[in-house]
Length: 359
Image 1: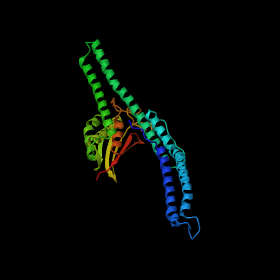
Image 2 (image 1 turned 90 degrees about the vertical axis):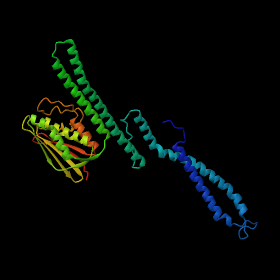
Image 3 (image 1 turned 30 degrees about the vertical axis):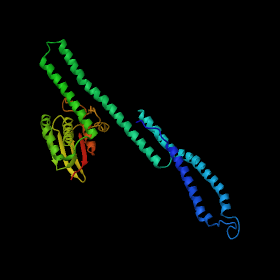
Image 4 (image 1 turned 120 degrees about the vertical axis):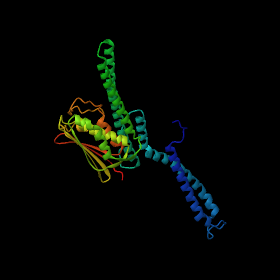
C-alpha cells in the first residue's frame, strides 16, 4: 500500500519528550511568578524597605529563565532522541523480521533476549506465528505436490489406455471402457475429496444442530453391504450426541471412519463398533475395529494426506485415495474438536472423536 511519507515514530517521541520538558519548565516559571514574584512590591524600597524590588528581580530572573528553557528544550531533543532509539530498537528488529518473512523467508526467528515486556511479548508472538506459518506452508506445498502426483497417475493411465486402443483397434472395447471408467471414477473421487478437504480447512460452512447418533446410523446403513461382502459385523451403539456443524461434513467424517474400519480389518470374522454418547460438554464418537496389530510409529502418520498406511492389512484390493483419515482430521479440526488414534493391543484401531456438545 502506497502511503505519503510522514514523521518517524522516533522523531515523534523525541518531539513529545522535548515538548513535555518545555511545558514542565514553563509551569515551573509560572509557579515562581504566581507564588513568589507577584508578592514582591514594585516600588523603589522593595520588600520591607529592603532592595531589590520586583523590577530588579524580574530583570535578573528573566535571562536565567530563558537560558534554562533553552537548555530544557535542547536536553529534551537530544535525550528524547537517544531514549526513543533505545526504546524502539526491539521494534526495529521485529520490523526487519517482518520484511524478511514478506520475502518468503519464513525460517527467520527474532528470539529477542531480555526480560519480559511488551516488545518481548510481541516478539515471542511473532516467532510463534512464523513457526506456525512455516509449518502450514510446508504442509500445503507437500499436499500440493502429493495431489499433483496422485492426479497425474490416473490421467497417465487413461492416456496409456487410449494410446493402446489406437495402436490396437482389435482390442476388446468393453474391457477398455471398463478400465477407463474405473480410472476416471478414481480421479473424480480424488478431486471431490480434495475439494471437500479444502472446504473443511477454510471452515466455510453453515453450522446447525446435528445428532451424531443419527449420522452414525446413516453411515452404517450405507456401508452395511460393504461390511457384509467382507464378512465384517457392523454394530452401532450408544445414545444421542448433539453437536453444532455441517451435517454433510459430519456425515462424510463418519462414513470415512466406518469405511476405514471395514477396509482395514481381518480377512473374515472381524467387527466394527460405532459408539456415540454425550459426555459433559462434549459429544463423543468411538469407532473400534479388529485387525492386525499396528506399529506405534505408523499411527501418527495415518492422518497425513495420501498416507494409505501401506503397512496396514486390507481384506482385498481396495485402494482408496489416501485422504480418508486426513479428511476426518480436517473436518474434526474445523468443528473445534479433537481426534485420537490408539492402536488396540489385540489388533485394530480405536478412533475417538470429541466435538463440542450442543444443548
